[in-house]
Length: 324
Image 1 (cartoon, helix red, strand yellow):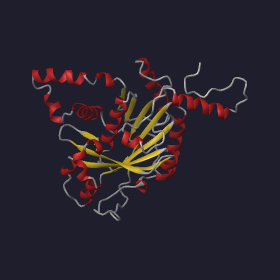
Image 2 (cartoon, helix red, strand yellow):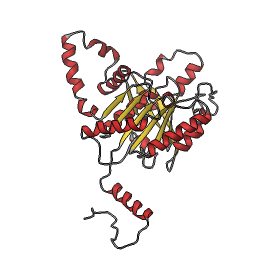
Image 3 (tube, helix red, strand yellow):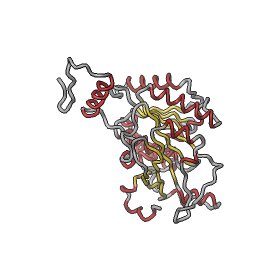
Image 4 (tube, rainbow, N blue to C red):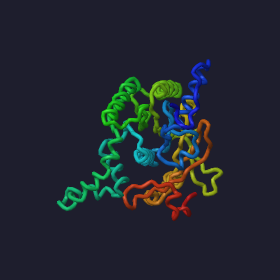
């Protein structure tokens, strides 16, 4: 029996393949298929059907601007939405990733983790706090093997699926979100424009054949000249043109997000100390390209006052005056 609100196909009607497929997808969408997300509602609102299976989202930014931190915030957001997340960390080590992860989850800074083994009391307090996150983190798979290749990726994705299945965590369609940080560190990834095009084409074919959504992290081209032209504060902004091989990413990625921290970039360019920009600074995520979506940006407040924290600015209203 069809669910209420389903479009019912007549048994004797000669429907085309396309009509059948479209009706089936509409029924899935309207009858309990979970809404996909990139982890933050403030990003999802710009994108029609975000984080679709078989599709790619690119997150790009300057070296040291907080791409991996923002990715972690997205990962935590996805976990809290009961989405399984797998991360292939080709750049960052396990201890570095996990220290940042628990700093965000527990609201603790590095000095706290350094102190937990120094006294029995600290140790007793620490483990119960950690275990509060245990159920959430069963949906999190982490691999910091630096030697992953495109050739190995399909088999690795199947292994990850089996891991989540063994815990009875995957939905019926097998969907999960895969993070690769950085794409350029995949062992057989291209270097020249043509090679990057070939690599992203291969990656697209792999992802399109599987029930996963890929968020690929990309570093912008450090050699490109950045300009504050047109910005009232003379602050520096990154755009699609700052991605090496940008045409390839635009063609194959459904959505391209660019992380901008203009005050930090300007300070670095002018040789100023950047310590102050790691507290109560704005991370502006520009939706630079979205199929069937809209251009726009979402602002987040980055602070390290009580552990690492990246919060949508609408949830941090006292910070509106520092948005540029």
